[in-house]
Length: 251
Image 1 (cartoon, rainbow, N blue to C red):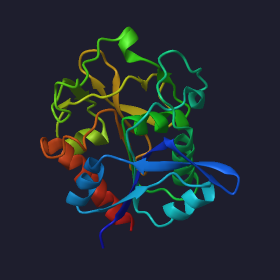
Image 2 (tube, rainbow, N blue to C red):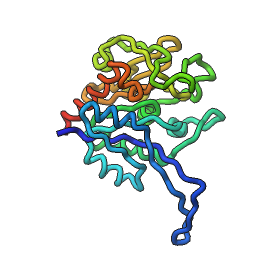
Image 3 (spheres, rainbow, N blue to C red):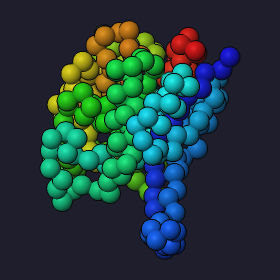
């Protein structure tokens, strides 16, 4: 049986559509995520399911009961308050409802049932925040970190990443160095409890991947977007194939 893997999504309110229902102002809310995530899961042997932002923690738990794995996808900034930091002039658009959903997912995995998790970009950051880590609020301020620009296709690599020798990630990617895209301005600062660094950017040493110290938890986070590069780099295909295989062993 193919494993069912949930993918968290962004949400946006349609500010132009304001309707009145039972004396309540209600805007249309859209959940969305780029199709690269689902394509990567489906092509690797899994069944991708997009997870809309729920009405309650119980709703999240009910959905999680039916999943074999979950991807915390990329998206808007996480609220720095989660890391006990203050919003500043560099903080971008926040989606607090999504923050709550993903924190509930992490509650489920760490407190109820351990299933494989892959955190991508903001997904890695909120994993780290949940475990007590902190954020670099704006890497452009203090680092010269090469980023994917509009004139460069997002599936193109823009900088290299060194994979730690003793990491699970190194075995999965079958390489000690990979070349990645980069679409972020927040980054991990202090590492959360129970995590270890699995990769750093070659030039400025920004944390590019984390994994759990306890090997029984198949939890990995990466700062780049491997789903976009799936068809262009065998290493990133390996990441999803391994993730789906691990999810299948749990179902």
